[in-house]
Length: 185
Image 1: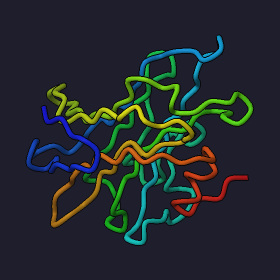
Image 2 (image 1 turned 180 degrees about the horizontal axis):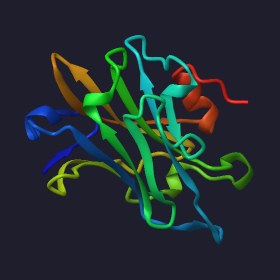
Image 3 (image 1 turned 120 degrees about the vertical axis):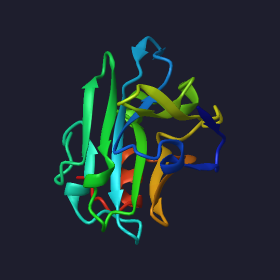
């Protein structure tokens, strides 16, 4: 297993040359703030070369758990953990990046931020072998951010790579979605 630090990347294609499907697992220490559970939601943006989604069909999250192309699906449950399954060979050529993030549900009303989240990570698993290929543990330095990009899986010269991002956003879901061309009502 490869362990990344913020800003590093690794070739998934070299770590597992024949892998066609991966699991993207994001996690954190389950906890409460002021006696109320922290409710975090995974989200994945399928972006084109311009860094934007082509439309709402390129967004995968709890309210749309499967991509229109069928390559990505959010599986599992909040109680036991959610993961994205990604069939790399089914991702349309127009999609260059898979941006994996997390938002805090109802962050403004509940007054929550990622400074209250501990032990956050993203890891890539080869489901065929059940081996963890790579892991990135986010630094715990986010005191005002209410949405995060954990990592990006991207194409480069015929390979799939993972970049450890760890970028926070104030403004929650709306700010994160706006970054990738998605309007939130």
